[in-house]
Every structure is written in C-alpha cells, then in structure tokens.
Length: 340
Ligand code: BTN
View 1 (cartoon, protein in one colour):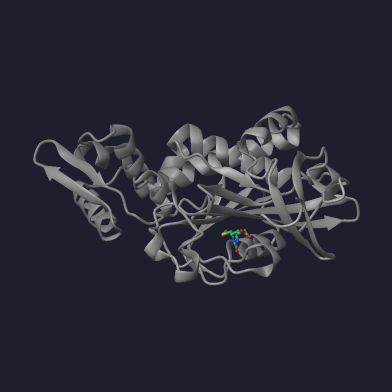
View 2 (view 1 turned 90 degrees about the vertical axis):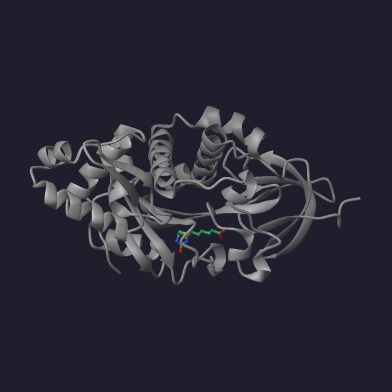
C-alpha cells in the first residue's frame, strides 16, 4: 500500500501546478509565473515538470511562452485527481493507492482506525476486489475505477434500505447527463448498458443495535478498458464507457466528477430529499420492470414478472400464482422460463 494523499498536502505543489494547467484550459503557462505562485525557482519548476512527465503527463515547451499540458496520464494520478477535486470545489479526504487488496476492506480498516468521514479510498488496481456474495471483481486493469466511500450515517438501518439504489440512480443521471452513457439499473446493485455490465456497487455496513454506525459504498466502474482487457469469460457480459461511446475519458476528471456526484447523493439521501426523485427516476432506469425473471434466493428459485420497486426498496415480483412477492436479496436474471 502506498501513495496516501488525503489532506496531507505532501503533493501540494504539484497540485498547484496542475490546477494552473487545468485553469489555462489547453493554453500556455509561463514557467516564471508558476515559479512565483509556488515560491520556488524556475529550475525547480522544470524539474517538477520533468517528474510529472515521468508519471505519464506530456507537456510542450516554447521559449517565452512557457509550458502547455498536452496529455494527462491514462491512470489515476493522486495530485491530478486532487487538482480536479479542488477545481470542482470538492473538499474530501482521499486515500489513494497504486495497489491494494480491496478499497472496501481498506475503508473498513481506516474506519476502524477512527478516521473522520466522509472519505474516499481509490486504488489503481485491486488484488482481491470483491462483489456481492463474495464474488470476485476483476480489478487488474488500471483503465477502470475502483473506489469506496465511507460514511457514518447514525440512522436506523430501516432508513438505509434504498441507499444503494439511490446511489445507482445518481450515477445513471451523471453518466447520461455528462457523457451521454445510457446506463440502467439492474436491482439491486448492477449498472448495465446494452444488457452488459458497466459497473457494480457493493454496500457494506456495520450496525450497532438500532443504528447504522458506518456504511461503505464501493463502486467498480469500467471506464477505458477494451473488451480484450477483460478475462475471456467476461467479454460477452461486460462493457465499458469506452466500449459504449468509442471515446476515451480523462480518468482523473471522471473520478472527480463521480466523487462530487456521490457525495452530493449521500447528502440528499441523509437529508431525505431523494425520495420523490428516486420514485420517478426508478421508472426511467429500472431495466427489469415488466420483465419475466428468475430470482434465486437463499430459500430457492422463483419465477415471476417484475412489478417495480416497493416503498422499502425491495423488488416487487408477481409470481406464477399471481401472488406479489417482495424480494429483499438474491440474484435476478431475465428468463423465458416460468410464467406462461
Ligand atoms: C458486484 O457487482 O457484485 C459489486 C462489485 C463492486 C466492486 C467494487 S470495486 C471497488 C470496491 N472494492 C471492492 O472490493 N469491491 C468494490
């Protein structure tokens, strides 16, 4: 584990340099002005620019004009991410790693250490990324995002039942409005596009008798990977933002937007402002509504037709006998079997 940035300020000067380039919006930035802003020599600026180049940035330099940022690194870069966050007016502690077992596990450890919430944990790769029911989440590609948000809601668990669904709705809004990606939610934790998996959400919580003490929301979002980057068994069922749009995305800018969106979504959730929006948006984003499904639960299989979301966030299914069932947990898949 390495590369914690958080609010440590360790990379503060790089952050200032990078913010200056972002604000220049593709224009030239004078080395003299940078040196004055940071209070270091021109030589020191050129050595920092050189170090940034080693980390994957590309700059052009013209005498009397200065430097221009030509290309960002294709992987998550902690100072660049922080620069984007500050420019978006987002103030949150970020713990950033090159490689870690699981960002959800690291968030758990940081919570156990008594860190203030909210905070975000990012990793370029995970060695033991996990999904629901202990399934593995492929996390070898640095072209995708793996991150976890930690909160201490201090609310009764009954108030949190729609939390993952709401975060999914907020993500669908962001993906559609900002990048034109038409994602849909497959209850309870998948984001799909064209029937393929674009993202997975994993919410894990610790409950003290009647209070949800902490909650960790993990997100794996396939951004710039190509289908050939996925293991063979996933190529037929996975997709990425690049696969859908044919474009590659600035992974750092995108990560900052997702953080901003999800922090706001959490505030709206806790403040209760989400209820009316969720009801309306669920209809737009639910990819199971009216579909014939097979639900596999701890107690067995059942077939039926999905009839929307219940008030408590459970999935309403009308079974083969016409009886409405509320599904709380389990795997749901489309099927042609069962109800005739
Ligand atoms: C699922 O589809 O079952 C949920 C997948 C969630 C994967 C993310 S990646 C970041 C975070 N860390 C993990 O170990 N899992 C979540």
